Image (cartoon, rainbow, N blue to C red; front, side, top):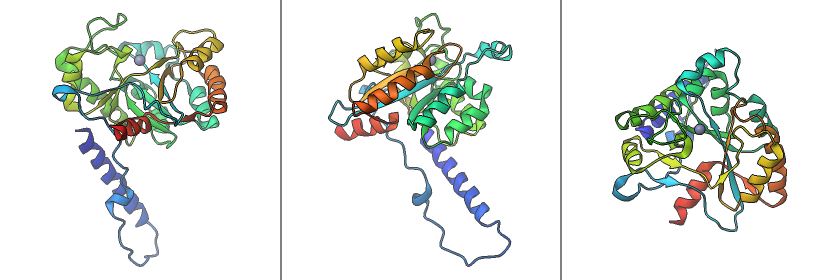
Length: 280
Ligand SMILES: [Zn+2]
């Protein structure tokens, strides 16, 4: 399903590019059209399905000598937070995204569909920046298990539709190629949820390093927790919602130079998944 949508998107992008090429007034000699494979984005790596075909779960990359680490940022927003956003509460964090660009740190943003609806310009900007990749964090951050930090729950028969609704919101915002990766709200999942999402064709992405940035007030404590936890192949979970994670930008400004000093290279989750898949 996702693959099909992606290839349609690729064709549209190619179509638009060709239309733009045709725009100049002076006709130029016809050149052979580039082959689709040379312009279509390569298919993102995914893990093979788990036992009985259920959605595979990825937690971290290979623990090899290649010192890679993936910073991930969850863009949480629930369906009922619109009025709070309208009243001025910031569920976005443009300063953090700007800092990642300034520091040239590749990152994966797990975006809720609701966030993309609230901040379409930012969603598009992140989605079109090759430094970043956009992945799925559900439509409105409802839980996929019954007991998950008090979050309201998505019923089993709505789980797949919820994930696809988020992808639809990304496309509407202008995110061209969201990744087939899904992070469960709160990380909460069980076999039932993994099974319900099988037809969506996603790889579930967890993490091995909790930054503790949610509702933190001490940026140094967040940075320390990350620096203590990171190993080669680590996936770090953080947030790009200013109201709920106000210290994240400052923590990132400490974490990034220190991990680079230790020889780590920042990568997107797709690179770690590709490396993990190739090891199998
Ligand atoms: Zn979340």
